[in-house]
Image (tube, rainbow, N blue to C red; front, side, top):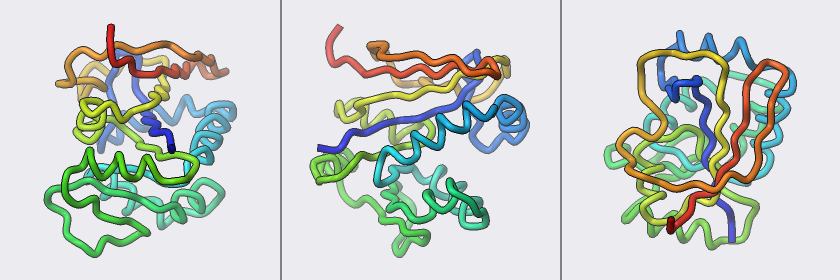
Length: 184
């Protein structure tokens, strides 16, 4: 069975960037070589990506124009996209998840392979949490506050997590590795 890993990068006050370039400009200041190594290693753990519509559209505009180890990996990986409004065919080695999203992701999870990775947290994450499909959260917390914006677990209710590992980077960023718990 493949693991489902959700990765998110956020400010210390829990804000995620989305399409806010001011946020990403702050984050990238803290992408020290050890943070980049961590992200590279994470990208090579799974064999496919899970995405919601917004992440898919944003990534599909940026990554095909880039070169290098990370870009080659992201561009070559199969992508499974959850959306109620996108229509097939999708570009960029992507497949639209049809029908019940949780059921279809469970089927993907049961396939042989290394794992499935979702970048960012949103409605797809909420759907997977409710269906107990998320195996790990890999959260990168950066040492600045942003003050406004989408917060990582907005509208997701109470979710208990077990801390598995922490890692501190030279830039002051911290990686938090959690496993969701199904009971308190």
